[in-house]
Length: 531
Ligand SMILES: [Zn+2]
Image (cartoon, rainbow, N blue to C red; front, side):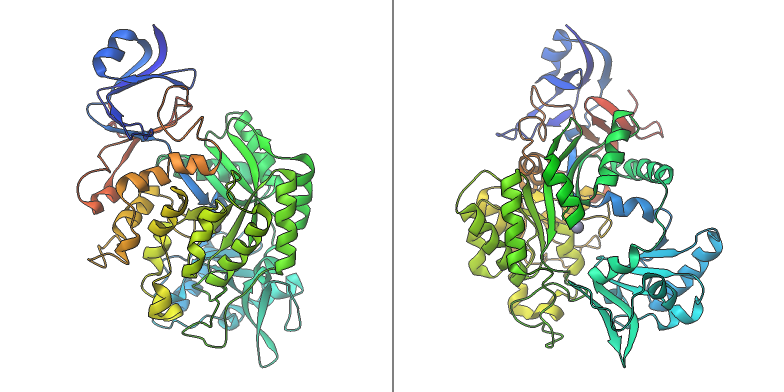
């Protein structure tokens, strides 16, 4: 029998219900038509492309259930601050960038993280304004929940000490705006900055897509996106200019949700838009996560509740009415409690709507069971645990820290979790999340015994969370997420087996090839993937 593609002599993890493996897989017109032994498939099929994988390892294409390509793409031409070791270094990098890109009329920098510096206090805009008096500059924290603007940027946006911004804060000292902005105050300044042209966006998205395909990602859960980018992605996919699949969570601000509620969800082969994304609170690093009791290292605050309970309840009813899955960012235990109250009020009990809580990071222990009671999907980011573990006890104290990053406990509720990276907050490589989930250590191997190991996932669970369960969370279990007959041929070939061996070796795995719908969309170009 003729077929398009046959991969054989491989170790293939199908990630089907029984977690079976096989040696060969046949693909025709983008779909899997057979799986089985080398002998069976090689005698049965004559393929246009026949690949002897020489014992390499094949997995379903990886999902990132929660990420931000739309934030990542422009960063390719912004100041990168993630590994800056002090505020002085941040300022020096801005200077260098300004010299490198003299044509840019405003400067955006992303990724500073004061918890990694000797001086861990939040920075302000004083030196930034002194050194750069003439060009607007906005420097955004690694978690996007805090930023520093210079005076020129505040001026451009008309933001000042007296500005009242719902769901955010312009930090003021001695009657003056310091330049530090929290939560929605960041967007209030950012939206006045010039944005890339449509052509520039196309270029940036293609570059960003390459960075995803080379790590084996085939589906992105784009966790905050508006109609401009959704239509651009749709157009580029139809032209074949983008290959990766998108599950879009619409940024549920007023204008966007009005449009999508009216036109309804979108279901295309590579583009799904049936989720509304809300925010209940901020992030832990910048003390924006909304806690039931004050921060252990700042008793003056419990964090920020972004919306009124009634407003979110209204939104939940609208999502239900218009057939949208609701997804809400909730980090703090108060934010999670609020969302479980709201979801519970609308959903009533067990259901098949698969509404999501993004992060579900710190939980009142009594609230865990409500994930099962209302069939709520936990959307988890394992690398957040290993990025935060150095300072999380400062914020929460020892007792509360025990109730954070409870991935195994969350998995026990409904029998699945969806895993994502939240890049660009973390790195794109999904195997770093897999490693963090199973080992709960950083890539230096710290801490040796693992951080709160009782909440680790097994390798099978971690793989399911980034394949079949992530597909389930998005209602795609019938078509993607495992390598079974009838499903699309989204696959990744690795040079090593992530299901065996030293945990840390997982992070060294190399992607040899990535397939979307049976098409090889990325491969190592150094000749190591010989066939
Ligand atoms: Zn996110």
